[in-house]
Length: 220
Image 1 (tube, helix red, strand yellow):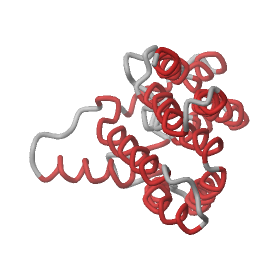
Image 2 (cartoon, one colour):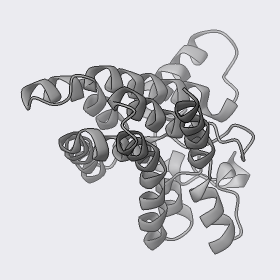
Image 3 (cartoon, helix red, strand yellow):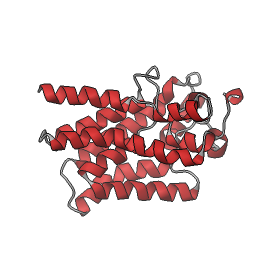
Image 4 (tube, one colour):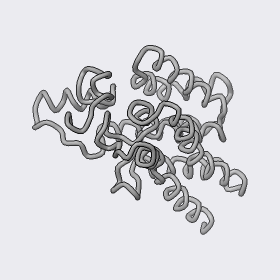
């Protein structure tokens, strides 16, 4: 059991490395937590730092989850441990040890897990993200991809663990969207319910996706 717990702990620490935050600090001297959606993610690097920087940031974030997943397979610890290690890295990314337990959304980490245990699932998720990007907002498409991943896996005879992994990914996504790095909710009532539903479905508090991702510190 010791190698498993070392791997899980290491996955959390590696996942906690705040790539987007560090890129923004180094390239522009800004704190991404007060820009756009308030999440230090590759998409916010794209919007507020430098478009070219999304590639290295995204690849590093994919690797943070792919590495512990691959290590578990390489050490013959089983696909269950591999999935758990990758998901733990995503938890570190979403609730980073180095950012006061703030963080990103974990989509790059999901890609990293799937690259190792179900490569076709990576294509499924990437395809959905691409459609959403072309339509101007990938938030709903992300949920749709995760919700339909088990059916896709069954159709192509994917690993038996994929439904459980997809469910965990969906729970982590919704939990992070609603928690929103502890961004305050309106008082109890219709406005609070409206914001919670927007966070769950669209990952934002207002109706306009463009206005949300382009926010600056003076608008927060």
